[in-house]
Image (cartoon, rainbow over all chains, first blue to last red; front, top):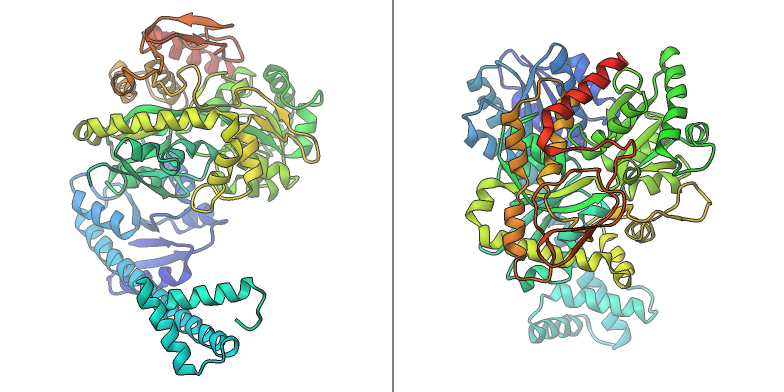
Length: 194
Length: 409
């Protein structure tokens, strides 16, 4: 069985590939380039195409399937008609799939389940990463705001921090937000260093 | 869940009405909140809609019918209670091709441009390098308008020229890279090609069919049934957005909203020109005013005429192949829901036509039409070749098309 993974994110594609590697008798192909997509798919001649739901090339690929259906290779969207649950789960996870007609439904189900799990794992990874980046950026802002207060108002570092904290509590906002506002205000009035 | 609609859309100027209904508070006034979901392919908009991630969508009209008929996907009955606009697309060619087929100037007579194009298309076909056009989707008004024009000019699509699919945001790139010779796409993507100097706007689709149905608000039929009162409220909010969209004093403000990255993105000036029916046809020329290039409100533009759904079905039969099926035609006709539109706007100041279907392409000048409410004047709605579509004789129209296309073979 030949599986094509189409994804403009090479990282996600490899995460999915890794997840499918445990399947027996599977050959897996990864396509990340938009430009050569149709030619690549036609060369790979896959039994199943897995593609991220929001991929900009989906209309192009569906057109290729529609045209090639008229010729030789019928490819249908998703699993057999009864498998609503699997389809719903895959859409929610952001996976779309195109499957050659007549492909055994239980095998598709297995592949879809594996891909969905990998998609989820990937988006968790992304969220974690974004959070970590956010925390770093917040710490930077607090440090910068402290420095501004220390220079412009001749405060000690603990006093500067206490000032930020007091303002945040009074306004019911997070310290990082207050710090960002201080940095922004400082930049606007032409200070340097912020 | 109650009162909330998530609405899928593609970054195009004609996604304006749901966006403005949200931004100007028209939805809120109706007790609704809208969540707009931006995508980059129609397949994704369709899938989110039919598998319940969104409640409604900005959609090319033929795709709503194709989805209901199960063409290219698992069948899912969709309903259209509101049309988001007529026309607003253009055909943009590589500058050297534009110069060849429109020497007398751009936005010329479509029949004359077609006659010149026919010569070039034949040469290119015989040289084994057929002209290549792009449209945004197999089931798009762009595809049907382009094919209608080409075929009527004696250029048979798929034989004399190739027609590929390129998503709107990549159309200008495809032209620039030489992957296609011409694109048929909505705004701002023609203007993006012109600004970059990689294309010239040769025709607008309003020249092919003066009042051609374009984008619709589509939703699953069961959602419409289950949330009927809220859907009617949504129709009222969209109608106010349409009114607001066409008023010149709101032009700059609306263009600026649409230009935000979460909506259409890009240059507000290009969007402003499209809304104002002013197009820069060729780089470093002044914009040209083409009235009714985009048609978002007047003359009951938002009314889902059943005859327009039926015209789209005849074109689906024509270009997908296969036989005309009266049962399928009836299913296609039922996708457009004038009854919902009427119920929503009854008692408002909005004129409501008396009929739900009309002969398309038959009006040459201003015509007063019978109404259920208000006064309504319809204007020129012709096809460029003067053909008339009578929805009471669908089979005959399909047969005319088939006879024409076979005669070309």
